[in-house]
Amino acid sequence: MSILSMLWKNLWGGNRTMLFPARPTVSDGYRGLVKFDPELCTGCAICKFRCTARAIEFKAAKGEFTWSYDPGQCTFCGRCVEGCKTHAIHQEDATPPIYLNIGDLKNSYTVARKTTVKPAAPQQQATPPASPQPPNPAPGGEL
Image 1: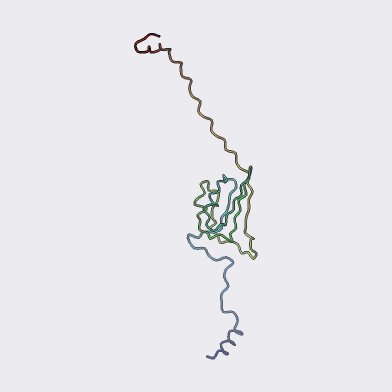
Image 2: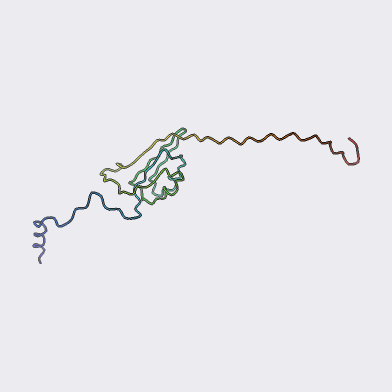
């Protein structure tokens, strides 16, 4: 078969490929976009330190903090989720939406710091006063 006849068949023969579905199927163990729950976050910033791709940014201020996530930098390793003790972040099971511009999926939250109430120290029970004891005399002499 000559190259010209093959090109002619390809140009005028129509499409021979199948279109992908709107979203590809997800395999078991897939780790998707990181989602943040500001109600559960304590502002410890462990997720930022565990993120090797630097996709999570954390900026602290006196009464609030800003948490932001850029999925364009994320490697979806899941280290940030494993390190979060309050389960304020998790990963989605679905594939991310289609986006055309850089930064379309970037999320940023400004959260007020939660005031932690220290538990009251348990009150000590009053101990009865000890009975007075006579002082020990010095050896070899009187007081």
